Length: 443
RNA sequence: GUGAUUGUAGCUCAGUUGGUUAGAGCGCCGGAUUGUGGUUCCGGAGGUCGCGGGUUCGAACCCCGUCUUUCACCCCA
Image (cartoon, rainbow, N blue to C red):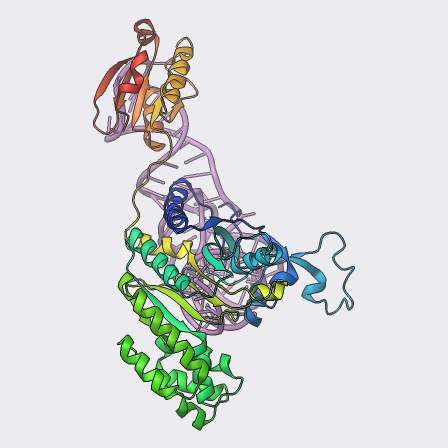
């Protein structure tokens, strides 16, 4: 067996795969554009310092760093302990949000605010592959910056629901608010230990309430603190009831109450769009989120989230453009495709040629080539068999490449200025005039 | 980064307690059959057993390392 293969966690996409990917991308693109988002593409790699520190410690570890060109050891102070920042000065894009923030900061004066863009490009993470997880995968993002209006959150939830409805995927949009989590930490007296609290809480559906309590203890929370967090572990089946319960619990926290007010306002407006769940345990790892956060989960398939997003109040500030609030969502194209495939929801999409023109002899090929060109002029995807092979072989090739029609155009046809067309699906053969190719039904 | 798992022909897989020349099906190539295929028959090509070490008289098989596959953890789309 040949040992050449794509690098770990990457894949080739053959024609059928490409067609499926294009299909999903075209749905996303159409919906993004229908909501007035303009396309943006940014480079595959950025300066290392643009990306470092934006995704948390765990995120930094997963950034693919690009070795300095030339003598990469030149900048290393201690050769026995080279630092990543000395060896590498560029890195592959880890997501689309940070490069977008960089773009906005750079062009803040030129952009009409609020500025909305969509972006469909690959991102790279140096993670170990597993189900639904690759080292190269596509994200499809829509973000708005320059407006704190919650109507954008409404709209983004609508986009989620519309896209998945159009794809026929049964999903639930989970909703939470960073301010709510901060409020809980406040009333439970957790100090600045917000992350330790949320990382464990986020695993509730996986490890259960007992597991979360255990992890809180391992992370150093006291019995008193742990007990104060108990309400966060209660089931949240009814959205209105959960909101009321939270409002009672967090009445002493200003940020908690503000977050709840936003969630109440938002849920009232988006509940009718599709399945929605208010989930206090939703945390999301990216530490730049400050307001509402979203995540999309597929029903009936064991798969990580199909998308996520949220509001970030000052992401462009770190790039020198403060005061711009942004909110955005991301779709994981590869996971969406895996789900659709597992559920058998992907349509069979045609690719390759519709017609194969046989080559019947050295004296007849010139006419056959003329016929092929005439077919192409009519918009028919056509291939001319490149040599005079046995008919069986040419038929087999037609099947293999998915051509529905074979065309015979030899000496007899040339004399009559006609062609013979055989439909391989039903075996029916027709004779067409050379100047009447366009009136035939080639589908 | 951690743990488990996988790798034999183009593909899917056999391969006994370690024993001579590693097999099958499908596919591929040629022929029967150079203007209407898919059936059938005959013949043929194709393998550093992922890679590198080690143990052994002898390794596809045992041991170590490494790469890769899949799955889980961490984290995430």
